[in-house]
Length: 338
Image (cartoon, rainbow, N blue to C red; front, top):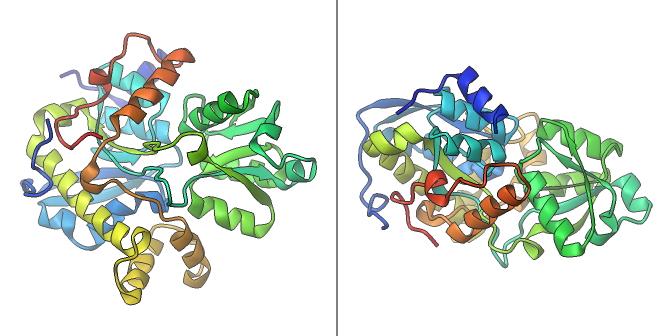
């Protein structure tokens, strides 16, 4: 397998049967691994698995590496700066998969009917100017981190459904997008509810729709790793996915299905607060964490139809090569597919 340095990975971007592993987790041989993440509630399965010792029980010594966007995380996986990561499908990830550097191995966050999901936001200035529905975004500036990000994909799907056009504005980091939206430099954006709802509550932005109405059953984030890990480090990869799945189960029970006690739910929110909204006092951070809980797929199941739709869109936009196939992007041998 070709080895990819960070420089090599960046250069590539510029050129650009279910197994029972989760029920009976394999143990890694005291492996030290780096896990890429965003400081979002949607990444809670990894945080729970770490804090509750599930990674350690599986023989994994985990260190987190935090990112501001999806595509730099894909570069880190390809170059070996991170071993496993959870984030949205991006053009960078797909291009690196085409080069034999990365593989999607599981599913994480999903849009699910009946569960509050990602929101469509507009700036206060745009709202006051009459942009109160997604259709009214025609010709407006839509925030993205990079071309080929999930924000680009969501914007394009919304625009296609409404028969409108958007002006995509790349701002590199989610924090920069938030700042631009609050100040009225851009008009619209879509983001997970734990970020969207507090922004709307502040009055600086307004919620005008739901992403799920435009992309039902959207596989928002995936678990991915290097192609070398997927092919050659099976025990370690199984161990990671098994521990991750236990973390997801705990998160879903406490904050999505709400089948735990109130005290257990409170404990879960406090655990997540160690990683999310750390700059806020707990009582101020709690509502955003609670209200932003979305389903994390049980046992890392992967929605292949959603991944196929995303891949098809990236191809249609010329953001990735037409020759890349689902087999190049996904190793479906680790988890069930839906």
